Length: 594
Image (cartoon, rainbow, N blue to C red; front, side):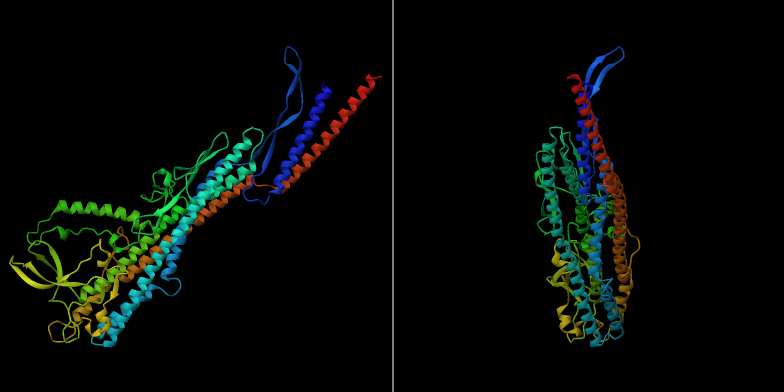
């Protein structure tokens, strides 16, 4: 019995060392394979035979050892940490790339800055105010205005085209998510089939699945769990993507009927959006994860316009001019609405690199055009008999052109589809409460619901009449003397230098046009630098975690070569052991046979 068990022991030693050699050779063969995790063989006792017992214990004879398992050397905690931080790095990297593209469009770093157009327009205004009678100076201003509008429109269109072009990248990300989901699903069932008998671990297939999880975590925020059968269930943004039985694919659709921009959604979850962008993502709640979400946030969900900027209510608008009575309740209601609009603006506009720069840039162009227009073609407010307040051309203050018809009411910038004024007969209430019917040039106001009525980029052009005849630019006093209006020229220059607006509703210091643009580009650069620093910091963190992962699961050639020598020596030793036992058996049999 003892000799036979010794043979079993020797045979198990041969088998186990042979398995060890196979595992080490497999590790060495995959030393350069991406995502491969070194495998390690574990042994356990084979069975025992009881040959007797005493009052203390059983008397047993062992039959060697068996391979318990060939396991992967992984650290699950490091895997989860790496995937979270890699997703965060991709989130900020996407936003940095978008910021860099917008900076390139403005050309501030390439010497073709829009600031040059802004400066040229200011200089042209200054020169014209020195010699308002000069047709050359007028022509220069008009040509500069044309260049100003065209360049602004070209920049705005390039940003908008880039915004729309991100659809391609979004669809690519969605396709990659679905492809990786399909591969994980297939690997799940292969692993389950191989490991079902409990004899073998599908380690190489698990490596492939883990690589897919690494790649998926870079695109979107994922969570996952593995059941006892080896099936991994994957969640994206808290919705199941891969389960044991199904794959829930993501698709894209337009955000609305008015835009071509796409958004990812879940067809199998009643069409709910994949990403909740109703809150600003933060690291505290792990909502700043994934390249796709970062890209969607940078792109935004609409084209930014100046109309999106909340306007703080003015107490004067809620004070009766005659009685001086202040409607405090109505003012407070308007103030509360303003605070709600600011919060909405921060989420829908300021959180997006592209939408915020579109909105700020459009606000600047709108401010410049309306400031010049309202100076050379001023309006005044009148009250109709119905109580409605409207704007009409202020014929008392409005300058005229150099033409013999004394052109009045022509503005330098006009809307492509809507006239500035419409001549009407209106009945107004005078300051002494008397009524009067007059013929007036009624100003066509800007309606946020009608894009054609706005002085927004794309709808602005230089007045065609003034473009054809520079003498029609209203700079002369309307007294009939033919003198040029110094007041008008000074007012234009003063408005350019005066406080215009803040880059953000949360700022408290108004800027003039030049400083507004400087702050706008500065804020863009600051945000870009912030995204860059965070993504670089995250990249360093990911590399550090990856180095820790490699220290755990990477293959060491020296270690595996040492193991091969060890297993080889063990194999030789067991061979000699079997030979010795065989000789002993032969000797016993020959002796007993005599």
